[in-house]
Image (cartoon, rainbow, N blue to C red):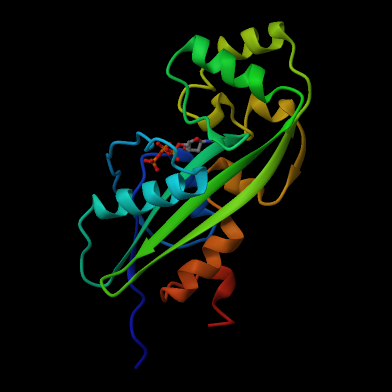
Length: 198
Ligand SMILES: Cc1cn([C@H]2C[C@H](O)[C@@H](COP(=O)(O)OP(=O)(O)OP(=O)(O)O)O2)c(=O)[nH]c1=O
């Protein structure tokens, strides 16, 4: 008899992460993790996202035969993590800084079961076209920038700021689906499209 698949828990309050994980066709429950997301001084962006994904995982209880998935996404410009905007001026400054150039989006994903944990970090390069002050002001009048790293949503109105994407698009929105499917398979969870290979 084969071992039953473990239960999957998504440790996240992000509706985007729930939607993305649903694309893998696996059953899961959601349980948000609340942690202090302040970066250490001089912490490299890659180290920061990795630490956040691990700390979100450590903040949640892990039950028997469960795989817990947590993640963190940062927009990185010239080695500086932009995080989420605190207010309108902060969001305006972020979008002005991102205008007409390329930045990186890093997402770290931590998978943990009672025996082990593994973190992957996936990098996507996003190039913005020039954004006029008027366009930025109009965007700030929408709901979109507020809970997003870098103050924009690729999947929404902010998608029209983007001239080019190199790498995983889903990674920018919160979970790198290709790499995630492989990660979950290493933890004994087989997404719908991986059933034959397992
Ligand atoms: C750049 C970008 C970010 N985002 C979102 C993804 C993440 O939800 C958010 C980055 O913040 P995170 O701190 O990674 O995640 P979160 O606080 O929303 O959720 P949790 O910690 O509970 O998992 O920005 C988009 O939705 N679209 C984009 O284009």
